[in-house]
Amino acid sequence: RTYRLIQNVSSNGTCFTIIANNVTLDGQGYKITYGIDGSSDQYGVYVNGTNQTKIKNLLIEDINKSGVNQYAMYFLYSYNSTISNNTIRVNESGSGIYMNNGGSNLITNLSIISAMDGINLFYSGNTILSNLNIDTNKSSAEGINLDTSSYINISNVTITTSGTDATGIALAVNEYSVNMSRINITTLGNANGISVQFSSNNSLDNAIIKSGKNGILIA
Image (cartoon, rainbow, N blue to C red; front, top):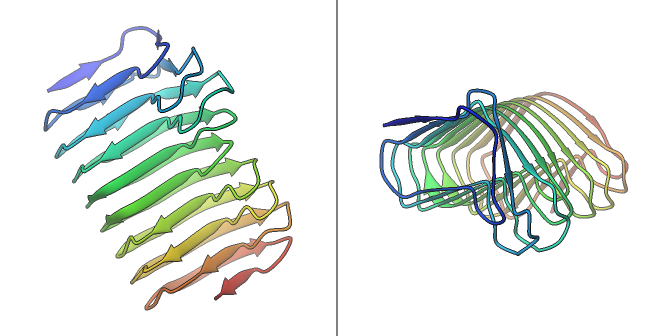
């Protein structure tokens, strides 16, 4: 089933919740504005327990700086999803994309400007991240944060962070077989380009890193 936007949409809370399999949400270039009332735990698109979800061609914005955990897209227990050709702008307390307990997903052709993490994968392995442009601007806000997520391929990614301790790519804990190629990272604050902790069998090829602290930290 495919659902297409024919105009901009907005909501005080979450705009779209998807709990069915095989759903495609095609924004056709229109804008989603979510979390207008500033409440916490609001999302542009919330996907829970699905297979084969596709989100594409959207501009997603959070315009209220109040509240916490305001993700443009939040995927929970979802597999074989595709997120493509989207532009995301998230304010003070929000992150771009959060995937929690899923896998075999594709995130490609995105532009993300986020106060907090650009993309966060938590227990979400076998995922491809490609052709991404990510900017974060708060302290400790990673461009890409991996936590207990293995078999990840990251390629053609440009990341700029401007906050203190805001790492470009963080392999936080228990990552295995993360392959990174054609990576361009600039950290403007006192931050690491890439941080690797308690992780193994990872690879990095063809990277440009301009860091205010360590280019690569292995701890």
